[in-house]
Image (cartoon, helix red, strand yellow):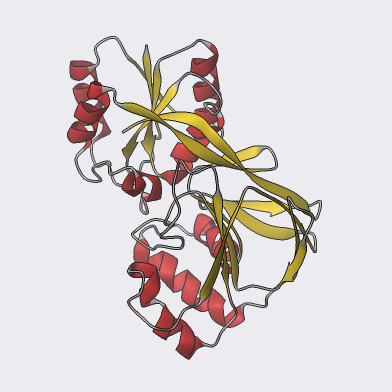
Length: 287
């Protein structure tokens, strides 16, 4: 059994009724359910996994995909996606068509699956990246904005860059070593990019059992502009702004409350402590 979970606010799909028609044509026995509130996609996905559905398809942006993931980790139910968001980071990682939902359906119909790693922050999961610092603040501001797309995101980022004050975080790794950082951004990457081909961890892999911990050092605007092309194509500029370390598990202490994000979805840590880890091959996906 296949369940399609559709976010009715899916930004880049102009005709959800046409999509629904295509779904019924290719998957006549499937269920189609539209989400009604925040968290509904997770509930629907969890219900499907508990009933041993073969596949759940998330139709929406990275936020919708993240919600559906919360209900499928460590289950036998596979995740499929039809990307309709602004960044579409995970869709780009697994090479799903961004502008052709019918092609996505045809790929899903072939039912090629594999298992991938999943990141975890306390009790929540992420597929792509979790982050602290500037990118977390931008995620919070962007979530409150009515505008979507690359331009508003980078406009918010540019504005917040000039107002940003680095916070200190104490990191404790699996082997007991500690490190204190005050980064521009502190990113834990399972995938390679935030979305929109903005690469933060070009050497990350979805199935290597590791997270890429990326530290973006505080810098001035001139070095930032010179190093920015490296995020669009690795090695394009000689100015490197990041340091990367492969990890499995880390505990983070910061001054509460502090912002972070999971797959671009804003969160606030009230307790001052977080644990981040990788769950190897914990999710089956259709690709």
